[in-house]
Image (tube, rainbow, N blue to C red; front, side, top):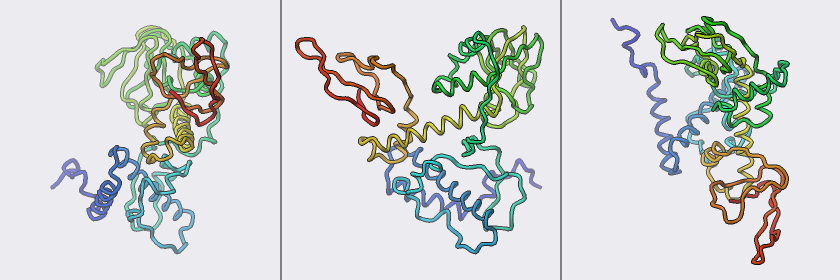
Length: 339
């Protein structure tokens, strides 16, 4: 008699479908010879998943309609040519709109899967209502200091940064308070302003947190139970960010910015010939920086360490003449690049 743990993880996989899928992927790799194989494969599988879910949503909306069954494993996938991949709203986001625990409709010739909440951002950003908790200027300054060096917030733009500060709530926890219980549902992400806390897993201390430390993000990002217990060993002042705001700001807006960068890159001449997965990589590497009017971005003669694309505004270029004077040579606008 076999036990559940003895079942091979692929025992329930449709071997024929699996073989067809892998064969098609192999053909695409041979045909396109991608430089970044992992990104190419990721794009391939995301496209397959989106097609399958789009078909499921269409069936849900028109369950009695007679239609041809579209093969999600057909030979029509071309990462560099497929026009669907250029759709700004669907290119990188796999929707998890359908309730994962709902009773399935009659058989559609496909396996039914149940999954946890997706880490991928949804398209319901407009449903997110910004949280504004009144604070004194002193509190706002302290929160900015607390999150200023936290890696999760380093790449936020000013609007997102302000949204985080507005949504943060101050929590004062006395000594011996169990701020987080292992196995509980994740509701807040915490940053420590003052005090010290210990982290326990199954009753064993594994680490400690002090001023500037943060905890609780994994349960919010992955919709998972708390992996550890956090106990205050002194009186503490914490700043807490609720789950919805955390996901909306740090995940939804980040994905939206990525799509914005990709659209922007499509308009830049030197990037137009790139494969879509190559633009994905560049978009992920971009970081917004702002400069005041008349501020020097780069100086002639300095060593170059950055490549710049003008996202908005204008940049004036000057060339130093032999007599030491500066001569304007051009004005760069959106889409221009330098460095």
